Length: 112
Image (cartoon, rainbow, N blue to C red; front, side, top):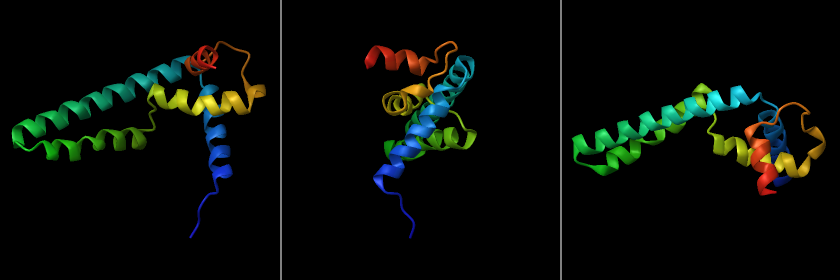
């Protein structure tokens, strides 16, 4: 059985955060908007199914389909970009690009 020790998980988070912080701002915003649209459609789908079927549990079971679609399509919610960017910003500050700041960098500068 393979598993990761906590230090490996943190290392992978820092690497993922570095990749997301070095993405161009336009790419980050487009991916976030597309992810929000897909998640919004999933919410509408879940609510519609819950109302039409008369069972809210059916809608609750179908809502995670939106998150699965996000993963399959490779989109990121902006909150995920910021959350993964914070460890990278804190643990590897020498990797910041000198170009225009990513939304994640702006949030990290204000929060930290």
